[in-house]
Image 1 (tube, rainbow, N blue to C red):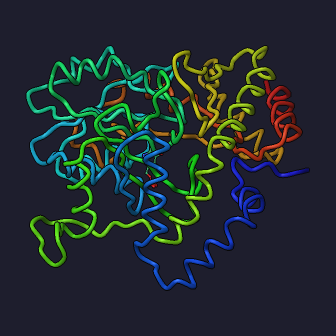
Image 2 (cartoon, rainbow, N blue to C red; image 1 turned 120 degrees about the vertical axis):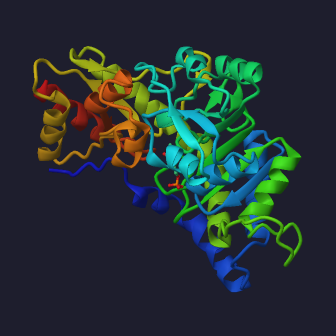
Image 3 (cartoon, rainbow, N blue to C red; image 1 turned 180 degrees about the vertical axis):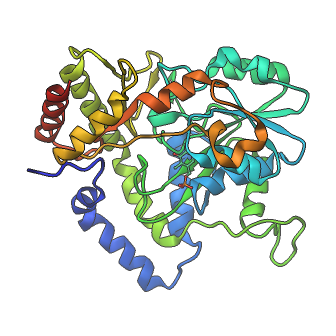
Length: 373
Ligand SMILES: *Cc1c(COP(=O)(O)O)cnc(C)c1O
């Protein structure tokens, strides 16, 4: 039986090996391993791609979020509204700067923040909203932008899973005040190691992020604030330049795979399939279905097991919402606090999804699914 992985990074490297190896060798021969053209050229190309005036590379998507929060001076005593159904880094960075994450439940159809519930979570301490474009689906931004404007809040977009996604023709990362990207290998634009970037149209915020990412020095060896060491490596900059040229075609391949899953799976009961947003463009970092249960047995878990037995990998992003994580016990949320996020954690299953997945493999996934259901 052929093993079908949830994602396979080796196939993309095979496709791009002839392009990537020479630019990596060039960096290695140059002796310029930190900074230099490889990084600044990538930053330039990426800000052009996103449509923002500034792009600042950094060590990871987590650091991008952290640097963005710091740049807006968000810290102790401040609250930031975000989703409980996301990767820990989203809330973790809010805590890391000393602020408090305030969770708002999600909309089950989009898996994104339910904008209708945001206003009731706003307090005098609220400084920012951090929407997450989860699984590559862009958040419907206009309502959030309205709320932010009314209450004088900053919007920090977590774009880690959505590089290339759009809302009404505008790329995520260029919709709020600042965009935070991850180049972790499995993201839509993935490097061969860690990497991240902050995008913004605000020159002051860009200058502050630039300072913070290099030990808080506005000029060399003058430090006026406690910063961090967070750089994008030259090798990653060179690789990401190559991959950025292919990003739209990789995202198109993901969209085609999603479309095919949609066609093959839509007659099946007990499944809720992800939808594409009408005014936006999703980039399908994940293809995440909901498996509805009957009675007390969790059918999602049973299906995942059946796929596993057939040699098909699938993933549960995420099995536990952030408000029920031990690290957030002190926020005093309980089971039932955010019912939609909790329900999602019981039902979601991400099927194999990567640009190089073949249609034969997809059919095998669907066959196995059908047998189980
Ligand atoms: C991956 C991810 C991050 C963190 O990115 P890293 O590069 O792994 O630090 C943040 N938020 C979300 C939603 C992510 O998926």
